[in-house]
Figure 1: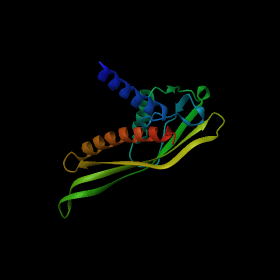
Figure 2 (figure 1 turned 90 degrees about the horizontal axis):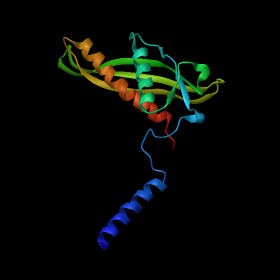
Figure 3 (figure 1 turned 135 degrees about the vertical axis):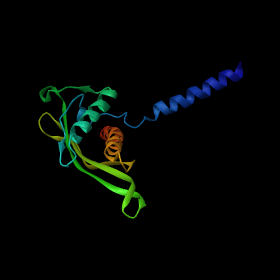
Figure 4 (figure 1 turned 30 degrees about the vertical axis):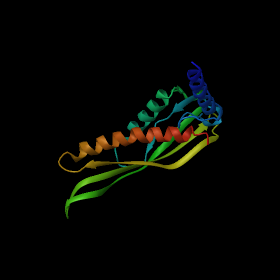
Amino acid sequence: MNRLIKQIFCVFCVLCFFVSCGYNFAGMGTIPGGVKTICVTMLKNNTNETGLERIITNSIVNEFSRSGVSMTKDPARADGILSGSVASVYTETIARSSVNTSSERRVYVKLDMKLMNGKGKVLWARSGIEDNEAYQAGLDEDIQKRKAINDLVKRLSRTFYQRLTDDF
């Protein structure tokens, strides 16, 4: 019985240490400027990749919703307005099956984002938020590229949210 009490006490002390030291998981911080309700505007697409702005905007909205952030479509009702642009998208060959034939490519997407309050003051801004994903080249390359973009956009949205809410 005495040994069980010591074990429980040790577990309790470890838990108290993590709670008291301010430890939290990435992305568990707060939105800058005390923003509680956010409006995410459609990103501008500065690339020739049609529809990419819609895919990324929807993914960002999903990430904020998944994280429990209060959202609104009306900028007048929001504490913060999130806007940005798809700065670039490009591909490069990373593997070849012959001198003139790619067997694998990598697609890169880069975002520029900013958060403003209702008065237009910039609360947070970052340029060059980037991620990439490899895909197989070949007969169904367009389908593979679209799947790679969808996968990297999910990670990119998560990365963006974590950078925005990072308390460090």
